[in-house]
Length: 351
Ligand SMILES: Nc1ncnc2c1ncn2[C@@H]1O[C@H](COP(=O)(O)OP(=O)(O)OP(=O)(O)O)[C@@H](O)[C@H]1O
Image (tube, rainbow, N blue to C red; front, side, top):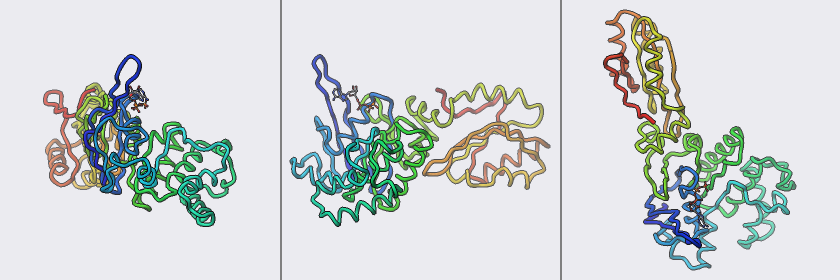
């Protein structure tokens, strides 16, 4: 649906050249929520602004639904942009216009007649949940409400793509979640393709199906969010995963857990995808005469399913514990390893 080939952007300042986007090639599917994550300066904003040519690429090709955006003249680009909505970190609203006038603005520019415009504005107000605030000015709204206006305005001309430039970075966690829920809602209702850039892994975890990690203008890793969470390859990706899963001090934790249990075995259970939906622990204690004591763990949810690790103490006859481990290994989709001082298998990364 969106195809990006060899995209580059170099800024020339007085004393130097900066390559903000350095040869990005990427395909984004119709209807997906695709996240781009990176630290400040990685080139994310420049990248997303190149997609609708708010920044002109130095080189490379962008095609959206078979239309080569990079080959359009100014007039064609103006029309093509009606199919590409955009929302911003600081909302970019018109402060002297009311909520409904802000939302109507792109419709006015597109030459939509007044009656039709007002009907469409009302539909959009309903869609983003701003009923009762039609006559308010942006200064009278909370951050979350302002972003809802931004979203309604971006959707006014029925775009096929929505670009989100750090759209929740100025919001508190609760408001962030409500805006992310709204984005998922409009993605499902309207089949809209969403590309969002962020420096927060929580945002990626919550709503994206796929993610690309940017560093120094390049994509250094990409894949399904669950896959990237489970098996991050680059150091920068591991740091982002740690934002959600906590700092990876597992080695230290294991020493502590091992020294604290006086009997039984320490098991490390790893849940990926559907495994988080299974009743692994209760099945095991129902089937085998052992006790399971939960010691430590964290499970988190992504759009592709859950992911996480649980440390448990298994108490009982050694033979029964072995049978229980074999059962988990063979009959469930959770992974299990017996953690021991001498034969620890730590597959997880170190940061
Ligand atoms: N108009 C410009 N002129 C010169 N350099 C620029 C310009 N815009 C961006 N840059 C530089 O390009 C690099 C990438 O910036 P960009 O804003 O795309 O990164 P980012 O990942 O979005 O970071 P942030 O979240 O801090 O904005 C930075 O080194 C930045 O200073």
